[in-house]
Image (cartoon, rainbow, N blue to C red; front, side, top):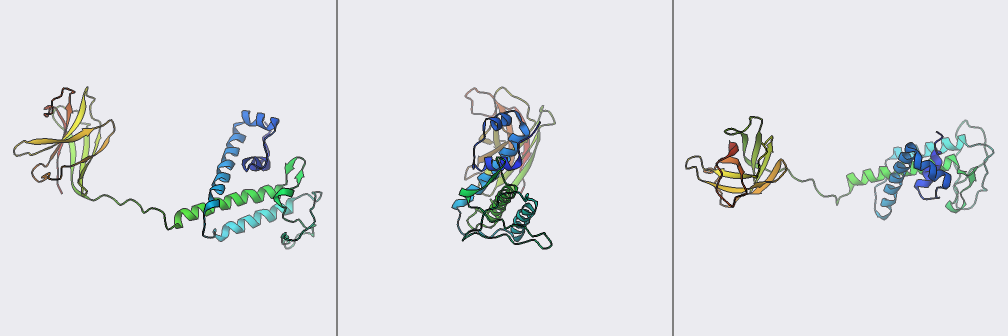
Length: 266
């Protein structure tokens, strides 16, 4: 299958022109060209997003060197028969390449006067636009690192006590978990391989000496939960973390069916 020319895809992605009927039909049947066009559109979109940014740091020097090298290489490859545009005031002439044969001057074209060759854009112009899009990506990457107003990374929570949770009673031994008491007064619970139950899972703190207990919350459908602890919770006395299987029976007491247990240390 003959794919669409890369230069043509570049300018379709930039919105410089619209696909004709033949190109639209080809894009509808060719996954390769659709993927390349989508990639170019994402790069062009990233470049557009930078228009509103101010005081951006300069892109790294190697990006500009790469753009200049690609544009000059494209100029050397341009056919001698290509239409030349007389140099005008305000345009900048490309520097000659040492050792290259003398060639007619090729000037930078105004966007409104871009020349076409055989219905397609010239190779050097497409290369320059593609390289400029790459430079925009480099600027975005630099800004993401250097912008002073970026939010600071979230600090790691301080753990003041923790307990490994193991299967309890008749619970399958593969069931396990971890409980961590955080300095901000929350209990982070991670569980794995809990057996399915017809009701729900509830989390308790138990005093191992008196076996008194109170509930601190329930687990949802995931494997992690963050539960607030009562402000006056005495973790030295109520040091056992318990996960139980409960029924939807309006009974707020512990069911007696514990699945996981572990003792806090810290």
